[in-house]
Length: 116
Image (cartoon, rainbow, N blue to C red):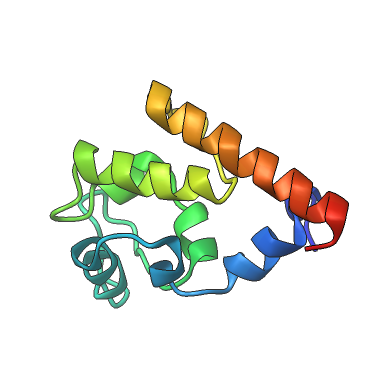
């Protein structure tokens, strides 16, 4: 386990190896990311994104350079990641998202406190 993974919850560690569908992203976004099949993006980098871990290993510039991925899609991706406790340095959630994330974090705390 690398240094970054040491700070993850057991649920987050399990999520890393799951399909992008587990983030509840729109089908079009998942298909766009998964169907790259080692294609080069506009920056000439080979991009292969099949799991949540693969997605987290790429920066915003890499992902936005994929055809059909723009700012709106990136915000959708970042929002889905934030709901699972993964945050990108350049992601700024909206007020509604902050409130929802706060509620989700409180639910997680209660579940762990009471063993759910």
